[in-house]
Length: 297
Image 1 (cartoon, one colour):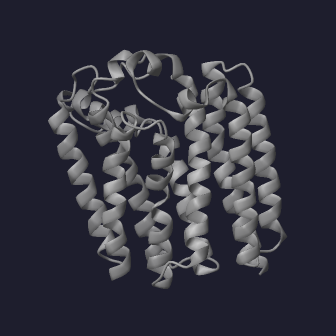
Image 2: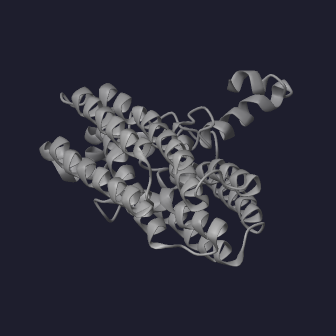
């Protein structure tokens, strides 16, 4: 897909454009999708059905801008770690194809674009956006001083949830914070799976993660987190008086989690990565369950 887009550019610009698109992970949309699904959960819950088109567009475009910004600051923060990890050694900053200062400038530019979108909402949403920007900038550096960077990622990825409630309802009710908690649990689950791919390299490089912290108990702890996530989803359904498709979606999500744990049983990196990617379908499953539940409400 990138090659098709790049063919529209003059040949002398293509390599540079490719490097910047790769820096923003435009070649790997999975991260944006994992941010998109909980944002859509929040928008549909807050609106108790289909959200206003303008708000939906603002948050959907904002997801891709913020994910791109997060990737730029992440690779800037990891510029000395990425060359030591086999999976990330080919990234543009790690290879020297993009200067770190240029990644910082891109991060600021993408944040500015996202903020322009937020200005189209209301005061509370604008105020909340500053905390979201701070979380996006903070997360990449947490793997140096805490073994729980996946939890910080969950907060950063989930901050669109209270913002969505604020944009639609003008306030953030308890339901919004409960959904925010659910997303932190889910993000910790799938990003631990992702960290299991690089665990050996991360240990050598001195990085920290929940995958390293959990050690041999990783699958068991993931099972506990999955149970907590499912319980939180049930509480959301009860509080919002959602119809049966929501609970059917939870059941299907649990089946998908079971498949993920089975795939990772031998801790083979390729299978851990496959399990991580499967979370895109899990997020979509829950969104479809929510849409149907609200339609029957």
